[in-house]
Amino acid sequence: MRLHRFFVEEKIVPGSSVAITDAKLLHQWRNVLRLKAGGEVILFDGSGMDYRCELTRLEKKEAVCGVLEEMKESARPAQTLVLFASLIKKDSFEWLLEKATELGVSEIRPVIADRSEVKNINLERGRDILKEATEQSGRGSIPLLREATELLTAVKEQSGMSLLAFDRDGKPFKKEEWNKVTNIGAFIGPEGGWSARELALFGEQHIPVCSLGTSTLRAETAGVAVTALLLLQS
Picture (cartoon, helix red, strand yellow):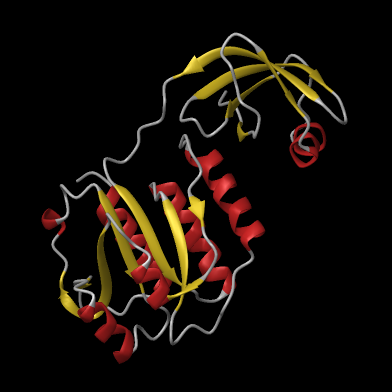
């Protein structure tokens, strides 16, 4: 039977025990999953490794987990991708957070675009979504989620990263041109696309604008498509 997998803030040391005091996690173990002392779970602390653990004690305010086995790190994408995702409606943006995490994105930076109907993000909820998607997908580390920022600020703050933007009217995207680029930042527009001012900004900053084809994709679909194209092995 597949073991449940959870992120914990505590540092895990092979061959030792770890005490868990996260109230939400303890509630899930005791009241939702009905776990008992003697049961096993998979824990990870963001270091890139998984640990098979036995619940030696499970009480209302604390659980103690004995580390039984250090497991091989989950495979990481060869490339690091920062997704600059324009803010869109709450449900759609949260879906994008979940799917981009499952696909291996390293960081998500919400962007306030000219056509963004939404101007902010609930960071606490967003980070919970990233954590749950990381637990589910088997990745070893949780992506970063930054505060929302204006496009100009997002562009000018970058250094040491190869940037590109996506728009229906851009030049055709050729994956082979990016296969050996290790650190990529990809800009995804909002519903309605980038404005003329924003496209001009990309040009001024020498950021190539690429197209995924002639179909008009929803913003969240485009974000997932770009993440998959750049990170999944062909």
